[in-house]
Structures are given as C-alpha cells and as structure tokens.
Length: 341
Ligand code: HEC
Ligand code: HEC
Image (cartoon, rainbow, N blue to C red):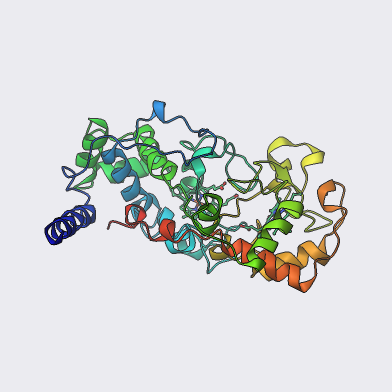
C-alpha cells in the first residue's frame, strides 16, 4: 500500500514537473481525447478537422497566454480571460486593451466553447477557429495584425520548435496559430460543479438550493437551458428602452434583433462579475433585482420577460444559492489550463 502510494506521488510529481515546461513534451500521450460529459449533446466544433494532440494543446495554451499577440507585447488573451474568474475579467466592467484603451463590452467567462454556435455578445463570429482574429485585430483589445504576430512568433527562439512538435512544420502560419488556439479553447470544458454532482446523485442540495433550482427551472431555464445554461439564442433582457448598442442587429441588420444579445451561459457565474454585455451590474443580487422589478419595456423585449412577478427576497436569495452551485472549482484550478510561462 505504502509503496503504491509513493509510486503514485512520484508519478504525480513527474507529471506536474513536466507540465511546468512547455518544451518537455515526451511525457505526454500523443493524442488527447475530447470527453463529452455524460448526457450532453455532441459538440458543435468538429475536432476531426483539427486533431487534438498534446503538443497542439500545449502550443494553444502558450499562445493563449502569449503577450506577443498584442501590439505592445503587453496583453495576452489570458489578461482579460483569467482562469481564477472562469476566464472572465472581474476587475473591469469594460475590458481595457493595449495602452488601457477601454472597449465597449464586458469580457464573458469562457467555458464549453466547443458547444457554442455563435461567439461574442452579438454572435458575430460563428467559428471557434476564426474567433481569435477578432480580439487580435480589435483596436480596443490587442490592436495587432495577424502578419505581425506570425512574424514575431517565427522569430522567437521556441515557437518554430513548438509548431513543429504540434503540426510537423517550423513554418508558422495564421491558420496553424488559429488551430492551436482552438485546441486550447475547445478543451475548456466545465462540468464539475456542485450542480453537476447533484445531477449525478453524488451530492445533495440544501433546502434553499433546492428551492433555488425549482425557481430557476420555472423562471430562467427557457433561456438559460441546461446543461450549457444557455439556449444559444439572442434575447432582449429588458435592460434599456433605447439601445446604445444594437446587439444582434449590428450583425443581422434586422430591426427585430435590436437590443438582443446572446443568452450567456451561467456556468461559474458567481465568479464572472460584473454582469451583462456592458458589465452594468456588479452583483448577482443586482441582476435579480433587475429581473424582479427593473425590466424595461421596448419593441424587442422577450415575451418571456413580459409577465414577471416580482421575486420575494427569499426567492432571490435561494436563486443566488442555486447559481453558486454552478461554480466549478476543478475547472478554475485545473493545472492543464494554467499559464505555463
Ligand atoms: C482586452 C481584453 C480582451 C482580450 C485581450 C481578449 N479578449 Fe476575448 N473577449 C473580450 C471581450 C470584451 C469579449 C466580448 C466581445 C463582444 O461580445 O463584442 C470577448 C469575447 C471572447 C470570446 C467569445 C465568448 C463567447 O461566449 O461568445 C472568446 C472565445 C474569446 N473572447 C477568446 C479570446 C482569445 C482567444 C483571445 C486572445 C487571442 C482574447 N479573447 C483576447 C475581451 C478580451
Ligand atoms: C428571455 C430570456 C431570459 C430569461 C427568462 C432569463 N434570462 Fe438571464 N439573461 C438573458 C440574456 C439575453 C442575458 C444577457 C443580456 C445582456 O447582456 O444584454 C442574460 C444575462 C443574465 C445574467 C448575467 C450573466 C453574465 O455573464 O453577464 C445572469 C446572472 C442571468 N441572466 C440570470 C438569470 C436568472 C437567475 C433568470 C431567472 C430568474 C434569468 N436570467 C432569466 C436572457 C434571459
């Protein structure tokens, strides 16, 4: 017994040690399995066109945390999408990019991206592989050109080697860069929350959490549908009567989409404050207050929100207790997703 335990510790330390350095690649198995949690639909992103490998994933992770992806070499994807906050940014309502220039939207938490059909609050991007081009070139975010990034990486001491490990070529291209990033982002699966354990019968809910779940099922789940906690649709949540940000209509041009935004997933929502596309609410209590008494009528308001009875303070409290069960501590501490640099 003692011997097995020692061996186990040795194995774990070897693994942890080898995780530390991106260049120690030989300890990892070649192919990674993309695991679909039991009961979930198959993913939207097709990994058969971008075969997941350990080296591809490791490269994608390094790129996600690489400041050379920004114009001033100071900002990485991970600057705005921080693991401890479920890959959102808790400090800023609106994200600050290169030279502190403020954007217009709140950085969403990232998880289960492989199931998403549309990215961004307005759903303007439909492919996980194309996704990084937006922040890379966005003036408010990384303000860089893809050609400059490719050049910087090509002239770096380690990247040609890492691309060779992942894709069998030392010639870096934007396509391979995007494929590697997609491997990392696609692997960000969060399915280990207390709620998931409750669903599997591995833990129980308190009376208040149970009450919160029942309220959630009645009042929220049509839009925040399990297991992703989004129905992947665009809705007007009754925030404004006039729309500063046209939301989905900015992409489709349809008046009926004015002021509608992607229904965000609520996984890890307790960690991803502030809330809404513009980060206007600081706390979950503020969100529930809005839902209870603050819905603003407008032409595109979702009919589902038209008939809302105010929530009692007890109901709000129980809903928040339920939302807290969506926090996945394994996900936010998973060593595989940490900054390797
Ligand atoms: C300056 C902060 C910032 C940086 C840097 C940044 N992002 Fe984001 N990210 C945001 C904001 C803000 C949004 C929402 C933008 C919108 O909806 O218009 C977003 C949205 C996303 C989304 C869509 C999530 C969803 O649920 O729709 C993904 C995926 C993403 N970012 C990945 C990345 C990657 C990969 C990088 C690096 C190449 C990156 N981000 C760099 C702030 C940032
Ligand atoms: C009609 C669809 C709909 C219903 C019903 C609904 N929501 Fe939402 N929810 C949305 C949309 C759309 C947003 C994003 C709105 C925006 O940013 O403009 C949102 C945002 C949120 C956010 C902020 C998430 C973030 O990351 O910023 C929380 C929290 C939330 N909803 C909780 C709830 C709860 C709890 C209920 C039930 C009491 C509920 N919602 C009912 C559509 C809905």
